[in-house]
Image (cartoon, rainbow, N blue to C red):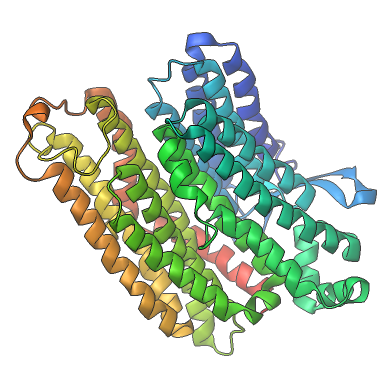
Length: 509
């Protein structure tokens, strides 16, 4: 079904809605948060509506196309499959969580919430655009509000953290842009679907070689570099702990819950479909980097004393599993068993993206709650015994922590299980070493639970306030979703699997 043919250009509406909300929020004064909340709720409703309109065969649907600058290979081309739509739903949920958590923004709240909505628009545009020029505009658009949100409302080292974040991601964007300018020079196209079709027949490689010589592999590396910074892949991750730690916790929720997924999404929508054959040629070094990301992220988290830095490095570890699966499946399928393993790994990646976004955003929300109640404290050793004065906080945050740990019955388990189910037959050595990441992550999460909630209650926390009714009501749907998807992952998998099979059918390794 097309968004235009149904009479509703739903993807255009989704992208424009937060922009309109941002303009209204700028002039809404103390009501800016309510404007942002309403705009994001409406966006979530539209994203869920789009989910019900997706084609059953997993192909791109809801297509909206219009001429823009045909001579430059630029057209207004939007479309959606289950991968993109799930990211829209995730972005709307995380934005809603972030706005709810930011009820104590007193410094220029109208500008703050306008920037949050501008960031949401950038996310929506990135997950729906099917033309590189159009996609790149939104990819960059999301970077600007994120920079200012860190720079203006962050911690004491917010300046260097914001600058480092901007420079790293901008360097990645330059690599992406140069690679795609070269592709356009050789093919005359910026359309992802057309370039994927050319790549699947080898025409893309021949066109690049005819114009520029044998440089397709270097173009693939440039594209990979752009996405490696965003995810991030070691050693391009060093901006992340500083940005996550210095950003206000509601902004960190957006960075980890939604923006980091842009990198993984870019690998699945752009890098693998267009440069799959080249990526398969460097699969081994990429797998080594993915394993380092998984294991290093877990060990780095174990050495931290700041809760935000612990969860920042834990995010590197969890997204490392997605990278592990993507690089592992970049190999020609020579049997039905291999194809099944690729499908399991890819289903796992998409589930992990959604589940990690939900869980990581929730964890930083809980950190924000702890900071509000303790006067800004967030050190691992600053608390203790909070289970006694704040049992509801301990219980709900415990569920989110166990989800991050990957406990069976919670949403965090399903994606990781599918990833390892798919990766073991494809790259058993990499999968085996990555198990270390699971073990260390479990130790890290259990340490957080023990240090923050167990043991004797320090005298100054004897009257630590528990969650109020408003906070319980806000957190209940998020925790409920973790439980629901842990028990019924087919709510997502049944819709995503046709898209997974459709993607694998069009990829050439």
